[in-house]
Image (tube, rainbow, N blue to C red):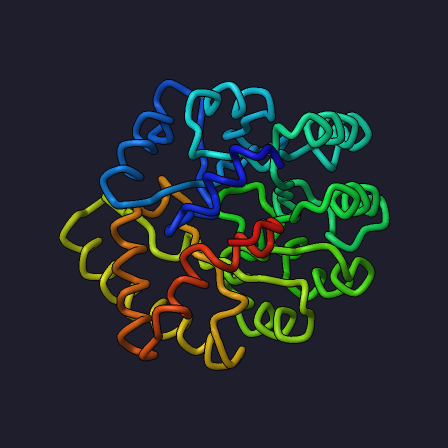
Length: 287
């Protein structure tokens, strides 16, 4: 990791571990809108995720996302690859980007590429991440658009990866929803596994009155769910703040953290772990 990136991350009090960008003109995921939302909500840094979706729209390549973020010093990138169709080319590209310090981690999407995380052919991705000491983040749980294979991204498969690669830092996104208890068990068992709670509170806009009612109910449920995860884990050391912006807003997620602080009587250290400390640990950055 470049020295200037490490310095920036060390200073960050709030890091959004999970944001998406798009090159499509009609998408809400514009870099300018992300910067505006970060600035308006006190988000000091963000991790933008490349995505290769051979089965659906929404892909953004490593080079595309690096091009979008090149003038934003507080937005860093996790690279990705098409593990289903172009594994070797993808691994070679990731190695080049890691060698040049252009990415700080790797994101994989098993539910959208129909590849099980514990498939031996992915071992070279994990070996690469271990060699460069960068984390691997997995989309886990629901596949929000068809075609998507939920069975490929169940958290139980990450247990095999964590066992086989004990030095590899693993981030299970979305708490593995709907298999949240399973994801919690994997994180509890393996010291190298973290959970992010991104994408669980969405910005639904259709039928606004009905949407607001059920959004409030969902937020209540999610707060209770995350609180129970932290109770199961007996602490905050495994929980990482991430939003899935623009699917979820920074405003709603900061309020969510405030609600967790109140419900669980979190102290300053515990809140800092969630908002920045745990992702910094996963990235190998010491405050």
